[in-house]
Length: 181
Image (cartoon, rainbow, N blue to C red; front, side):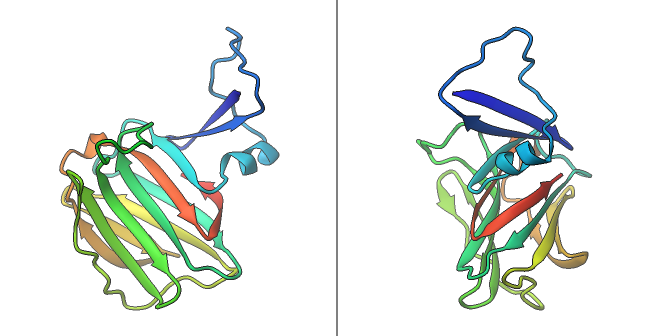
């Protein structure tokens, strides 16, 4: 399998292609893909490393298009790369879930294997099927501040206190990712 990687504003994007591993010393393992390659790198489900972890002042931007007939999608900031086995379960500093059936934009966290109560209150549901969106997650000292399409929707106070350990962004569900930053 050949592994391709690209850095996009501090998030390392990886994808695994064909069944051939390129061990060339000339390949630094970090490539700047063209648009065609980038679309392959941003496939859902997606997992990418946040270089240096989170810290106050850092922000994560997810731009995408909601599927035509969506049920839900999730954007999560987690601790621990390559922990797909989840033995023990990895900590989730922030899980944002857009649920279309009841038009809820939920947020929660998992610390030491236990999920927090989902927070659900929002002024409005910002996502529309088959339409683009932009989610910004601003990290502050005490909280994450979440914006969608430039409008501040809510704050989520840190449950995972070690911000640098928050090193992975995971995206899954009924959406296409167009850009990460």
